[in-house]
Length: 199
Image (cartoon, rainbow, N blue to C red; front, side):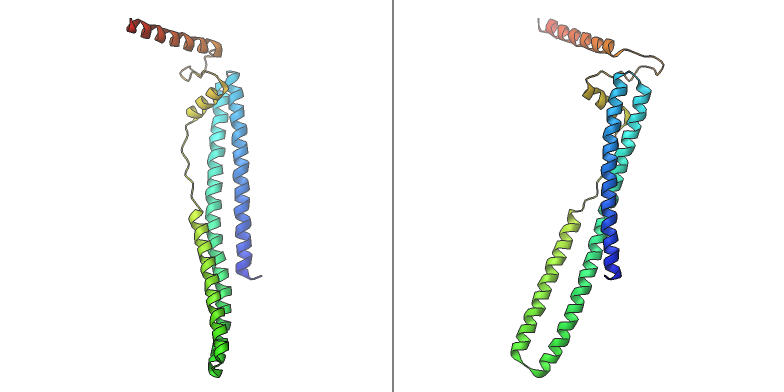
């Protein structure tokens, strides 16, 4: 195994490790989101906020790991091309030497066979180059939307079926049931006002 092939192996291994790290961060983000729901249900907004910050940090780390994995994959594809080109170049050099010897003897059958082999190696090179280009074009860099902590808290509260009152001061503890009841009361008032407008 040449040095380039060793580097290629190490790059592929690093890309897989980065992919595993991204998956681990995804799992930790989901765990933090579950903790957010529990904290909101208990009415503990400070703990919910901390878990929301942790979830966002894990999500950003996962995206960074994926982005780095994509970059390492792109480098590995380039190294793969270099390794392949090196092998093809050696084969072509051997073919050229054989062609020189054959041309000296001017044996048309040998010349034809060598030309066929030469064309076959170029076709192989074209296929490998096309494969490398396809791999690189499919490698996409991901962009992260910057979610706000409050939006994540609201999303978790919605999933848990709770009404989250972000305007309450931190020292005040409002019960979830009263805020749900007041929201229902507001909705009823709005419906009554619409009915009056229609009459």
